[in-house]
Amino acid sequence: MRLVTLMTILVLTVATAAFAAPATQTIPNARVKDAVTEFVRQKTEGLGMETTLRRIGFQSDLKLPPGEVSFEVAAPNRWEGWGKANLALIVRVDGRVERNLTVPVEVEAFADTVVVLRALERGDVIGPDDVTVQRRDLSSLPGRVYQSVEEVVGKRARVPVRANMPLRGEQLEKVPLVKSGQLVTIVIDNQTMRLTATGKARGNGAEGDIVKVQNLGSLKEVPARVIDSGTVQVDF
Image (cartoon, rainbow, N blue to C red; front, side, top):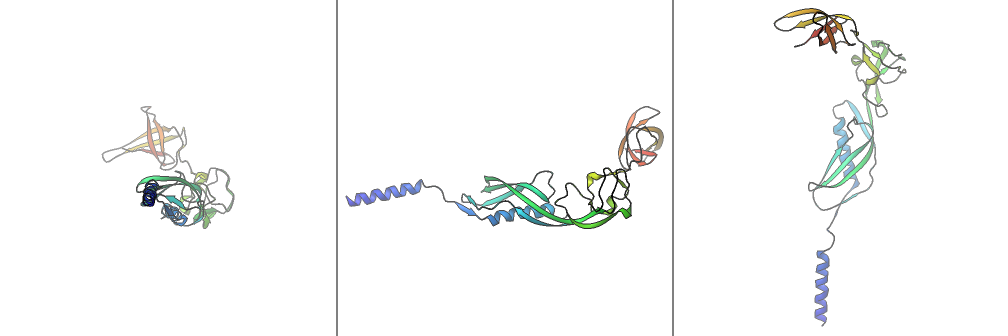
């Protein structure tokens, strides 16, 4: 009788083990942070800036099924690699998605930045003495910033800009050389011929811009590239 009882207990123990929950593995929080840190490093590599991850908003370890763990990190399309963002962290085990997490981050980034030395009014054209290059933290600056003086000299302010402020892409524009309604010389130039005609610009354009121009002879409108204040070129 006692032998039967022991056999019954053994059978129940084996059956219980067979239906027990599968083993798990623990992925330490530090490994998750390493994956996020490496993503930010690659995102900002080659941009000429020094970045520091000031905050990673993920504190717990991960409990996952056994197997090989891999991470995939993705950022919002318009995030340039600094400032605040919510990153997507996809965790896979043996290639199968196990977790899809949101990880808030805050990245500090110092880089050479063009700073305006005087207050700019709308329409002011920037000269070489109006700007300098300083190392600034970009994390609080939205959008693209200029990093060389050559990028801004000759452009004009689209909006007022305070002195001692970094210049951002949307604050400046190229000075139009051709204005809508202006008479221009249309140049058609390729390897076999060079022709000219008189035309009327149908839009404003700076050097290198493509504008619509009406040929006053044929009355047809064609796209042309602005060469200078009175000349546009039709490219073939």
